[in-house]
Structures are given as structure tokens and as C-alpha cells.
Image (cartoon, rainbow, N blue to C red; front, side, top):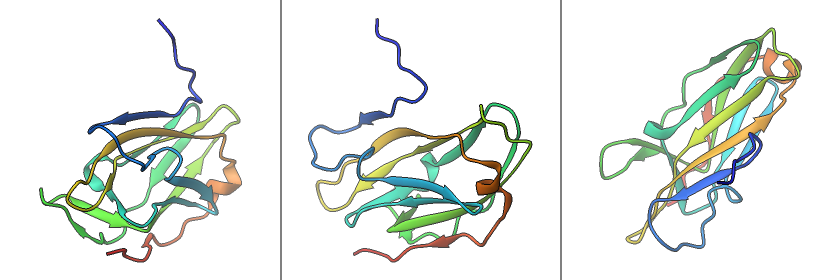
Length: 141
């Protein structure tokens, strides 16, 4: 049995075959108290499968998600383009990790959803100190 290291990115496709890669095509960055998730055109993020957890020492508060771009066929809130979520942290140490889980979906009649786990390694305390207003990026039709 092969064990996965904490830094490993995991991707579990929920439907077979697609050119969209939820690990490579979804960008996650932390800067100035903002966690930004950027999605390519033709994809959206589902609210029900979005979470940020601090692993290691310190405290973390995640601000409210911005107003969604719309809803999917099941009525779940979704975002297109980019989502910027304010976060604050106290007592963070070098061993701290931000773990972000998300479920991006491709759009259209043959749309597919992917449950993914991505780790943002060692965000500095300065990156998490300030907060801002959560914003949503441009909507892609």
C-alpha cells in the first residue's frame, strides 16, 4: 500500500474522462489576509464542498464567502472566475498548514465535478494578519 505525503495533491474525478484538471487548473494563493481561488472559464466552485482548515499550531478565522455567481441544478451556491475569502491568523508557526478542500465543476451538458484537496504550505503570519472584504471574480457564461 502506498502512503501519500501531506504535500500531495489529491484529485478524485466523480465522472470519467475530461480535459479539465482540478489540481492544475484551479489556482489557490494566500496573500495579505486573502485566500484567493481562481477558476478557469467554463468551471465553477460549489459552496457545499468548500472548506479551509488550519493544520498545526495557531488559530484561523475564515471570513464569509462572497455573494455567489448563481446556483446549480441542485440549488447549491456556485462561484465562477475567482473567489477571494478574507482570513486572519494568530500564533501561526512554521509548521502550520492551510488545507483547502473544494469541488470544482465543469459547465455544460456534459459537466463533471471533482472533489479535490489542495494544501497551501507554510503561509507566513504576515500573509494572514490583515483582512479584507471577500469578493467574487467575473462571471463566465
